[in-house]
Length: 370
Image (cartoon, rainbow, N blue to C red):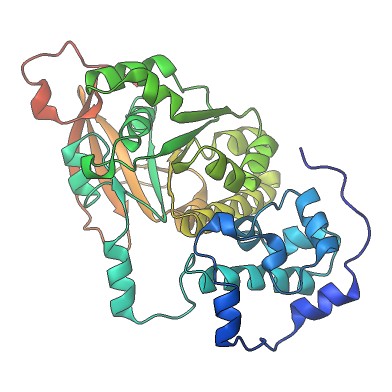
């Protein structure tokens, strides 16, 4: 938990240094004596211009432990945490981001489109376990992005999430991330037994897979927001490249009932989602969220089912996939994407988790419901 915060205002020296518009020149001798760090562990909060011991202590007391933590924090949130002006907080955040850029840990503010294209080619993708789903996603779940799966109960959302926990720990050359994963469970749907079954069915060591997954059971919306606030620390602690939130909306939807609370709910949801977006980009992780659905009473033709959360959630997701039941199988449709074609595909759920339909034509024993 966050310790009691120091109530003193930032000292004048810290603020002046942070707000200074001039960048000191760096000579060749400076570079030789103090090379620019290229690993996040080499960076310290006090490496940021304008942050001295006093401010560094306030930041650590507020739970901002690393340069990455500071870079993804909003100025409004930080100003409250360390009892400073928004201008000072914004200056510290900008300085942290600049330090990450100088250390080649964050993209430059402006790059040419060809450079951006080359960078995108180097992004990692994790297989969903189904070739059909991977094809829909043009290679799998992408890093530096939020992938949303929404659909009614039993449509396969949690089954995809369980499968991803297994595939993520596989080596990169086998379609995984070669890393751990974090599973934030808001609906009580995570089952380690299911992970064990999927891993064994895919020829992996269930014990190793289970040890690679950090599970957090969340009980209310405030708890979820606190977990997201400290998510950068957990990503580092568990060496995770995949973060799953199943589901993103259920707690806020249950606690903020009625039109009178809608604005407050959406504001809190928006703040949390933007923090997730910044974390995904700066930590180079993949975020997968599941979402519930609601019926639109004014839809007279077509499918009245739409994703919950309104425009706030719709704008936050990089890729949005709609899942539907289709007999014993499932249908996935790409609803929103910056570049994916609007198409759909079918997959099934077996002992191996999310799987291709053709592998189940000879036997229906393995079919499971979500």
